Image 1 (cartoon, rainbow, N blue to C red):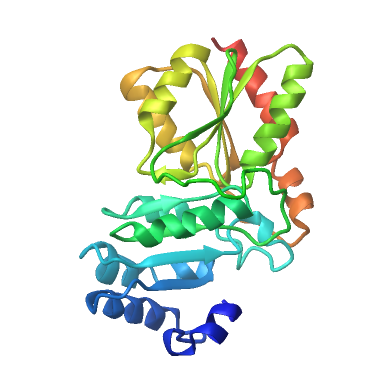
Image 2: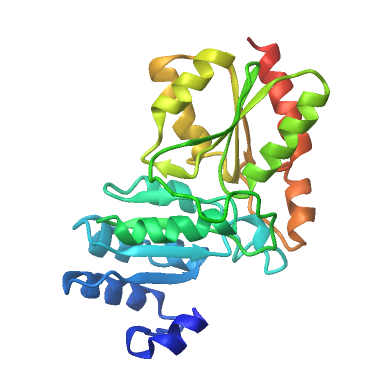
Length: 275
């Protein structure tokens, strides 16, 4: 935010570690016709201020954009107290709230521009680590529209955030073994693109969900609800299984908690075996 502060000092407000005040200030600015972007670590942008978000933003559909960095395990060395793994569940349960989790720098930039044009509350989640940039630089971001990145026929890999790259790597590993995997980037967790999910699983017959979040309340839960209501099919989950994080490098933590390409490959084979 440093460049913005230098360019527009009269439009930049530093609230320090008073995150509840930040959300209240943003809600007030929205009432005045502004488009406020409230940003801090994801743990403090959601967990610490959930009451203010629920009462002052979501309930009245305020046009507030909550942009939360340092989400998930890949926050790394700061450890469990800062590694929020429950934020997607918390935010997607709020009526009126849009939840977006882009996969790389280019998609995050496109999403930021898109939510500025969208009228209503948005939670934009992104991470801390240096991460591969593998999507086009000048892409158009469409809220609520999943992106089929790779076509396949044997299994569908639904991924969000950092795990999209891991799914792309997993697809190559599976292809080397003669397994055709479809990779779909679910950058918008709410509203969920149920049409894209059902269309893909109808073709492949099974799926894997992959996310840097608790299994409870995350993307996988949303996909499971969609499938059970419309087209029950084998679904395997990649995510954190009812655990807090810990201190370590992003790569070490993703490997320890099973959030990597190797485990996506294992889950894909398990899903295929259940068909």
